[in-house]
Length: 474
Image (cartoon, one colour):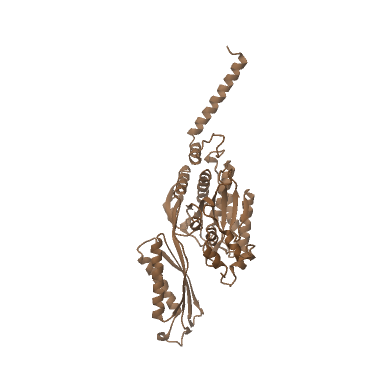
């Protein structure tokens, strides 16, 4: 027989063990616990695992703060609300950078910048020597655009990190937010300038040594005025080695109407269409609009107008709905109502998910430009391909992780192609890549009416947070 005190002690131990086992069993029945175990790959009760101390229900997005941050960032603009104009290296751009860097610091991230102003905010993992998992986007904005393009991917990424921190999650791989310099081509005519350089574009680094904006301000001088590089030799210091990150994710508004129209919460991007940009110039003789009779004119303006229509024809003749073309800029010189244009300048954007088909369209546009110049007896003074990028495909394992996160959160999803280009297009040259889309009002973007609801942003942030967590544990 056991002494009474020993019996009581054993009984209490039995009760404690039974209660603890019952609690664990209940946890395994709890769908949120099962979800956490499924996406993390570790049991939630295991003391040595990198997990959340709370179930998924605790992954609460502070959407009120996120909305306030987006609103505050939108005030750094060179155009009146509700529009946003934020051009590379301008005063408002510098203020926006300062605002985001401050938020990164408040979230406990270590912040650094490279020579062209790409900004990095890192949360060190338990194994910081491993390649980090990165996420991010841009905050520059074309003239008179909206508040959400790119911004959701920067401030939303910051909120995703905060969500993980509040939940008690401990990453294995470090998590890093990237604020990319100049995704928009507004000032220097180069899209995704920062991410192209990170991907190691020697051609761009060389071109930037002599690149100037519309006011004849050089890229080097503009960057220096914002506190960045002062010597062209510094540009190449930005380059990243392939494999610098284990994965890159970008959260973004769809910029199209599909998700909203179909009532779907999340778009999982499988590929990004291949963009190309062209600059074309015609030169004629010009003259007085009344004195020069029609048979004697060499009108550079009409040559440009005819080429614009040819762009539309060649795109439609491709036979694919995925082929698109846009004449986004058409300028005439001298620009007077009573003067025949002596010069015309066009900038053309054409894209396709099929690189060969897109290149065929470019070839036909060039042939049309030659034919129009010859027939109208004007000079085709320039036909320049500014960029001609290949498409990018999302990594299968990252697609699976994003889809898994949407299912864990009971959100609907759709596999999609992005026909707009993003920094992810070039980050795919550095690391495996994936993108998350959220709905936006009527698909509006690049205009003041651009809008994403707090609920949709919250859904996107949660999917991003869970996917980052999963990838950080691999």
